[in-house]
Image (cartoon, rainbow, N blue to C red; front, side, top):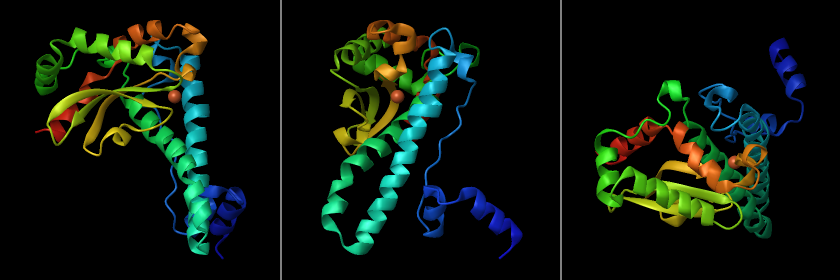
Length: 228
Ligand SMILES: [Fe+2]
């Protein structure tokens, strides 16, 4: 065995990622943020962004990988009860990974265009469906503030009906759980871990301020790709 392989094996030990690589299973990794942790202050503090990314999102990734490895074992053993039992962990942790990967791209520092209203076809579609951008923001803020417990408020595109929708999902359910033709354009995390250190229990203030750093360019790019 080559020295490099030996060193790599020693370094990785019995990690889930290494075992999955050996078995040819897909493993997921924490994506980098496209900006520094403090780059969207004062809307969201650097401390929140760092914890949210390095601790919360990392935990979803780690537990998603673990659950997928257990699922592979259970399938190989024909262990149907365990296959079924693992579905909730896969939905929760896989959803957490999917949702947060979108969320980081939904934000941008002000100097890089954060908060600039959407232009082009998405801007027109928002005016057509909601009356104005302000009306959409009000609706998402009201729905996000009214969501009981933890979850997400979304602006999505229904690809089949070619129309915009506002939806909420509980826990870490991704938007696709509300309809197979729904594509997320913008997701706002309303879990307390997303705002509590700065806003305490005042979720409406967090929702009010997050629009100052929303990356509408990202949402527009997805909209134009999915609805040409
Ligand atoms: Fe979160």
